[in-house]
Length: 293
Image (cartoon, rainbow, N blue to C red):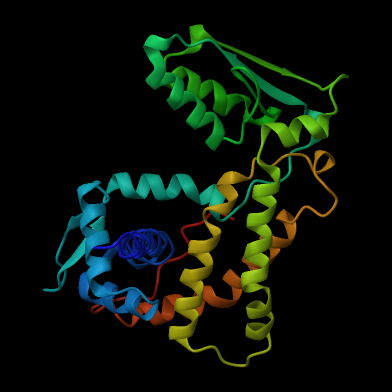
């Protein structure tokens, strides 16, 4: 296999995995946390995935402990495991309710740590967790986030048994280095903003078209809904929810959030109704939203 073929295969496999995870979170949980495998393959084929890639992605999630084989009504299928449900629920608050801009007046949480080389793995875990919480690296072993992240940071540090190697402070910016400049050095602000802009560019015109359309076909709704969710769900995790005062006036986050919410409101019901047609003998309609509003 040539390098270009390997790259295409790798890209296709990655897309299958991400779309399947989006499908599990946005659709399967609404269908009783269980999916018929043949219907899943057919529905994701409508979204442009080939059967082989979908089955491979399912197999990998099964090995990861996210899915277990559970037949229902004589139909082969997979149920979401407690581990999968916990992981998906943990992402809901960020994916469906993007971090709101923090209040600058509440100040900042600063974490400084000194973890020895012998505990390199824990040091890596700590920095990974702090990054996922929205902390930015503003100096050697110095991490900064809005003050509201204090409890979350303390929990992560305690969980990793690194309390003795970390110092945590909460306070206000008083003077010195320009705060906006420090923020730009500590976070990939331009990259985050570009991600939001690309989302708006990809779906802004489509949202206008859907709003002006009297009827949206169920299949079209599902395909677009999965595309929107799969594109969107990676973006909020990169956004630390910094105060608007430290961001540029043309920050794209709020515009992108409004567009995502608008698309979900338009597409979600139709998409779930279309998916429900492929589930065997359902006694009731799709369950109420898994999200907390």
